[in-house]
Length: 138
Image (cartoon, rainbow, N blue to C red; front, side):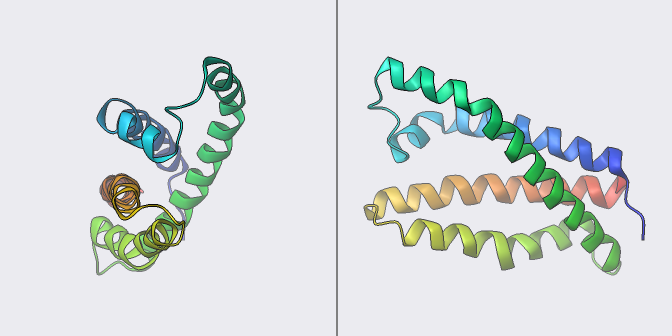
């Protein structure tokens, strides 16, 4: 089985762009409240920004690995579309993992639900896009 590595790279870039929009203008203020970043002083924010580059690189590499595995999964289950495959993976592995992280972190119920909906929603949209792209060009 072969996969299209250009498509995998494109999905990785797409994930970073969607993440910047999702955790920026769409849900950034709420997300910063959830993770407790709104109370940081200016020096702490600057320190966080300086270390973010390495974290973005690690996140990008993890997404590339994720898309690479998803591409092989989609290729292997030819009876289902790329989107159907991606939704099954999201529903069976991604969403329960995010739910567990949200439930077991001792946050207030409202914060836990917000965390779950923001992270789960991002991953749902991302996996739908991955499934579309990998199904068509993967």
